Image 1 (tube, one colour):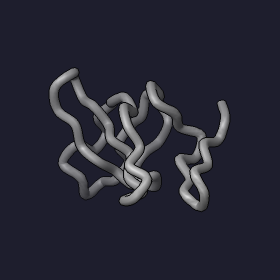
Image 2 (tube, helix red, strand yellow; image 1 turned 90 degrees about the vertical axis):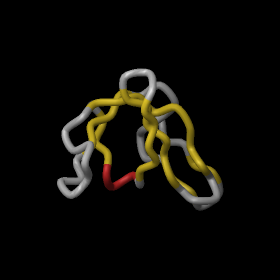
Image 3 (cartoon, helix red, strand yellow; image 1 turned 120 degrees about the vertical axis):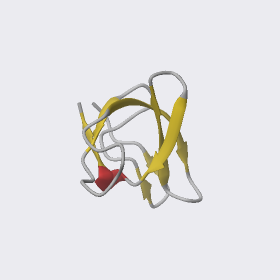
Image 4 (spheres, one colour; image 1 turned 30 degrees about the vertical axis):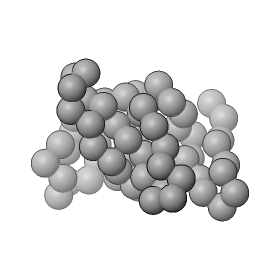
Length: 66
């Protein structure tokens, strides 16, 4: 794995195509698995796609690499 650094913005060890699990227990998608499809630099959010249709933005601390 490699770290993606965009100025001060950090995606951790994740990259486009990484599989992630939602670890935020307050989130409706908790424990679901999805794929990273985009990184919004301005908002510092990671777009995760579930099942090919649904997409949601998450902060790095809400995700764990699967």
